[in-house]
Image 1 (tube, rainbow, N blue to C red):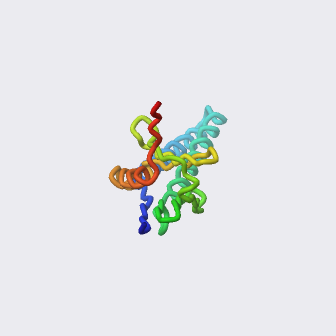
Image 2: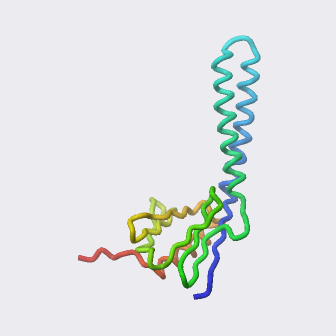
Image 3: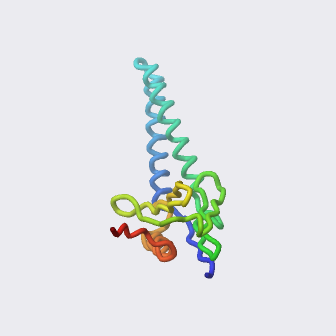
Length: 152
């Protein structure tokens, strides 16, 4: 089996995080301006701190979800390599460790790799550039490890 690489490139997610961070920056500035005015100072400072913290969390996630070389899912003859979005490490799974592969969620937007020892690895659609790229990965994995039929 020739190695196949499916790159993570979550552009829509990164756009949403950037727009959210900008909106939170505006809300933080508004809360700080309200705190400087006479009146609800403690509540405004708390509101500014909360929105500022959320803004920093959005910026952190936006930065960590940027496309990087080798960041994605690799299928080869030995198994599957899955890059972890926030830690930067690779998770190595051999084909023998994977019991089954199923699409989860209402729209099938989460791909579940269920392991023999009882764990699971979830790969979400929002990490891929398009539904077609996600569907291609899901089809390749389901072809190699089909879901159980549950026939009686």
